Image (cartoon, rainbow, N blue to C red; front, top):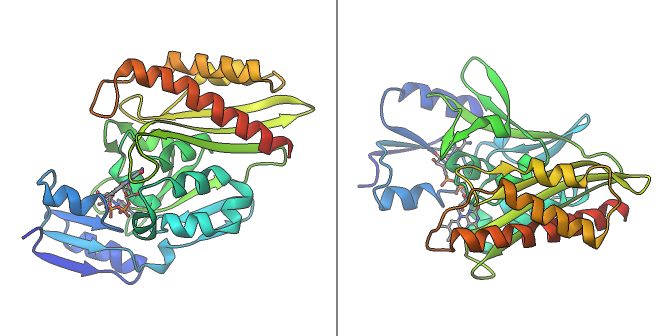
Length: 288
Ligand SMILES: Cc1cc2nc3c(=O)[nH]c(=O)nc-3n(C[C@H](O)[C@H](O)[C@H](O)COP(=O)(O)OP(=O)(O)OC[C@H]3O[C@@H](n4cnc5c(N)ncnc54)[C@H](O)[C@@H]3O)c2cc1C
């Protein structure tokens, strides 16, 4: 048996109360199950009780709240890329969502699950780093709001205490003149984990890049930002030379390893390719 008990929560309060009632036992949340069930099968993890949050309506969907966008943690990638709010304000997330697994995975898997699984090669998380998003964590009596980069504390280590769950993700709607883009290199077009990916959010004003956030996936124990690439971009007008220099600069921040998907030196090469592509697309969108 993979687990002894499967509880299905219908509301956020019920999910939290189920977590609390099994606290002290080996209880885990399940959303789409596309990471967790595999890990249970392969005995990487164990669980006595699973609490299914996929039907919790307060944790699903995408909405605008003042000047912020809010994505429920149990929102699937298909819901994300079909959302006009995401397409209009954060197209990099729509782009990344379409590159995750294939359609079957995109219909089941959730943004909260990507964050909860905390893989350094996760595709949605770099977008959240580039957007300076916050993770909202709920417990029975309180909510905490944590910048996504602080929430990820180390290799597959997140700031989530027993009895807590990720309720939603929030970020400021990027202002006029902003362009965002995601670029992934993988060994196949679908059903493939990133060898390297890059997410970019930048703002152009009077022909000059005023704000730049560049995030990299699969090149360090966690997703990282690239301060070197950001410094190269800020204050400069977009040009092919600048895109290439930003890509080269990002290589200095990458700390990749060799694994079955690629060597460290191949990954360092790919960082420059992915960053320059993503920066070019973000600049084109910013001026459009
Ligand atoms: C064939 C295949 C292809 C894939 N391709 C990609 C890919 O291209 N890119 C990519 O990034 N990933 C990929 N994945 C991994 C996976 O689909 C994603 O990480 C997905 O976002 C996980 O979401 P889920 O809802 O299925 O998570 P689950 O498996 O349900 O949960 C994952 C982990 O997060 C925890 N969790 C879930 N929701 C919450 C919450 N609200 N609060 C706290 N903890 C929570 C769970 O307890 C578990 O530990 C692939 C997986 C498969 C099987």
